[in-house]
Length: 367
Ligand SMILES: Nc1ncnc2c1ncn2[C@@H]1O[C@H](COP(=O)(O)OP(=O)(O)OP(=O)(O)O)[C@@H](O)[C@H]1O
Ligand SMILES: [Mg+2]
Image (tube, rainbow, N blue to C red; front, top):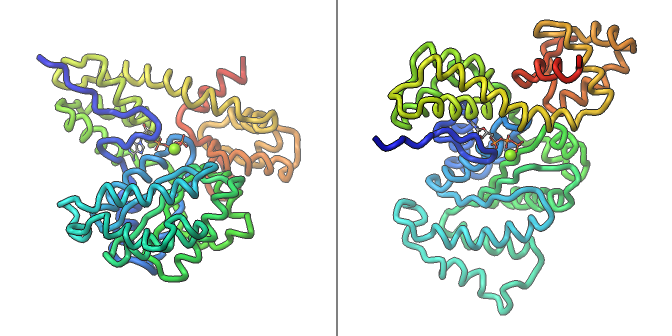
């Protein structure tokens, strides 16, 4: 028997074969693409800690956009992003204009689009905004919109800020444009504090939190079955409770459990259990250790003061254990919340966000 290919994708930036949760967000965006300029969801910011699936979501939406008459131009907020956006817009248009499965785009050649763009004696004439506008106008003649996706937004990227202000102009002019952004919580809040892009504060903001267990169970099962095997109910329960709603962990657990007895027609509870153990090791090495090294002394003191509690901690207890005032402790709480390590649980209560990070901290901090 030929060994079946492992369908799980425990690699950052890869769109999984089956997306767990997120269907409301996806629907909002796709609906916005159909309704066009004026829909508030056309400017959306996804905010989430490492491994919550920001890049996968942007890539997924970029691919889906095509079927709705939009080409997607995807960049990260790094130096050179403006030129990158311009060049990609030309290239992506070239790649898709003649595809049969895109009714609205069908039948038009890139030559026609670009001839408008190149009509002026010197095609590269004008600044970025003029060149981009010329291209957008040419595309609009065929009702093609351009969806920009900007990953890893950062407060310190000058080009991101320049892009955001130009984008605002394009929106005001009623151009067929959309902007999906994604970033870590502290980067996003830094960017939104910048006065020159204050209009971004009005973008729709979604926090990519933990995914409910039933949706994880459904996605695990669909992924396994899509790969040609089955998963026992007991095995599924073991896997779901180890995932804790965290997308990257879902891929690790699925990948490892699949690999224990790859020739067996189904994933057994024994394989699930062993897979979970291996996946925890992967998490430590690839997520916990790098996260731990980014924490300051003060952050670690705050976290150490949380370890005594089961689940949720009271912020007043934490301050008392640290031997500092609540005000002083709250500056570390805010930092940890922005880093996605700690999450608020109602007034005056917090918990550690990443599944099993607490166990990892106990090992590191109590040694
Ligand atoms: N909705 C989802 N359901 C299941 N798995 C997912 C989902 N979204 C992402 N993943 C998987 O989770 C992992 C992390 O995804 P991704 O790289 O998109 O995270 P990220 O938020 O961009 O992380 P980083 O902040 O490090 O860039 C990948 O293995 C991806 O395949
Ligand atoms: Mg990413």
